[in-house]
Length: 103
Image 1 (tube, rainbow, N blue to C red):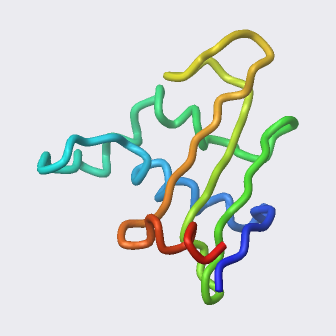
Image 2 (cartoon, rainbow, N blue to C red):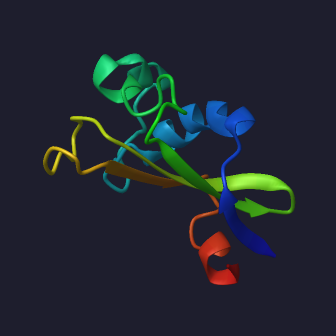
């Protein structure tokens, strides 16, 4: 059974993996190297997460965090305007759809 809950500060390190999994690639295209998340434009989504205004929830299944949604005020790839937080959503491979169907 899946549940959605607030992500705990000790789990914020998991956002690095979810950031990588959130990178869009076309079907059949190879995934980029994991080093791509070292790019400062991408690091901005997770670096120092937990500052004032940052919010994260996660999907947990069988005691394992399998998905995350997090938001923070920043000027990233989805910038919509001052005061509008950017939202990132990611699910581990093989878990996409499964957690949502059971939640």
